[in-house]
Length: 253
Image 1: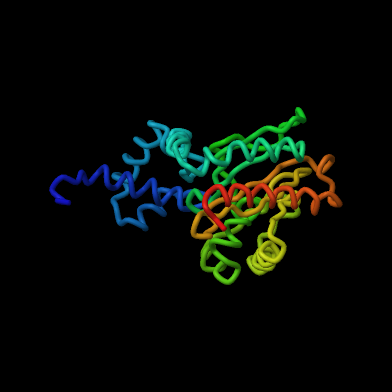
Image 2: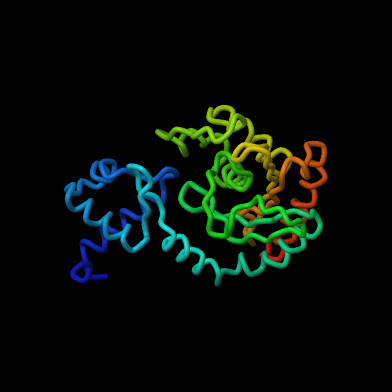
């Protein structure tokens, strides 16, 4: 492809978007200036334009993904085989557990809820489709970290990053997180035990494609009143069973 047709300012904007969404907490203008070596005034104009078009959102001094960017990602996902195949299984999982179920995929170093299916209980504790969640404290994120990144590489994955303490249960030490990920692989499911939100528990299991690679996670979200600690193994088995059904539908053996 001839470089003569490339528009430099558009190329910079695309690279800035990619850099911002790759970081869990976004980036500041100064960090972008250092990363790309672009003049401060140019960075400001690009960020201002992307914010004005809702592709990026300013949060304090940092820029994160804007709702238009998230919506565009969801529109792309809507035509994907994974989401269309998973929908009836998520509905089945919600009916079997009585809780809200969800499908999660990578979005940079975060997890995006690709689909959410509300349970029969009229208690909404899960985020909506298109929402982003931290990988290290969410059940879906821990599935992807455990199987796609691996506990041995977790320090490299989060190198230079500070893990934010969302609740008193959030694991912010990488050694603790790595040990938790080992347990995820050992038992076949992950648990977010009030690590993202107080009084909320989530359980997730891996979804594999035809080659056996883990490409997503599915899970359930509930309050600690309905998903009590002693029920975790029983609910986890239901989640794993449905995850296996989706995997088989995608061609996994």
